[in-house]
Image (cartoon, rainbow, N blue to C red; front, side, top):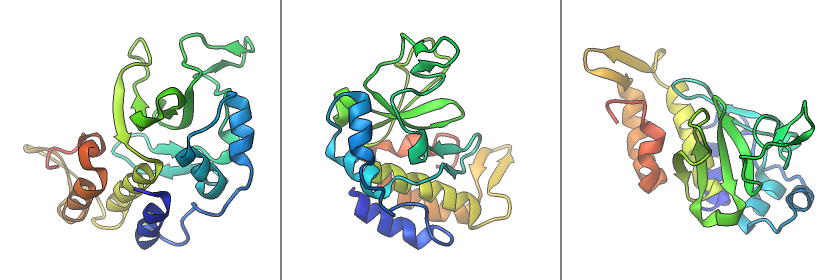
Length: 200
């Protein structure tokens, strides 16, 4: 899914003016220099045309999915790639990891050395940075799925969650809207977006 097609869909469901797609010029050149390597075309397009100027928060079941704004993007990410107290790199962080944001400190990233692997969410506290999920094949797909889940949690029932003897579920109207769309938009990554819902 392209960024352009994802933004068109997001524009239909985001309340007010969505925070993407305003253009920021040479961000890709700056960040390519910081990472000392060429960035994949999808990421260049995102940085130069789509990345938000400020952090964007997408609601989830628990901690929000925080997409970093342009000022926070870079090779030195405190607590992940960089120890700001010691002023040195953290050795177990892969320098090819381009951190896009996090979900409750679980980093959401693109591996510049294997960009074909798509957008990954790794699990902090697992002992290494190998455990995680593929969230999307492209940045467009990732943005659309995050925005869709956020919309489902805010646009339907006053309480979007049902917690009863059948398990923890998404409320009926939200579920009826979200699950078919995520099956189409997320494709093989559907499970990563609905893992918290027993009725998915």
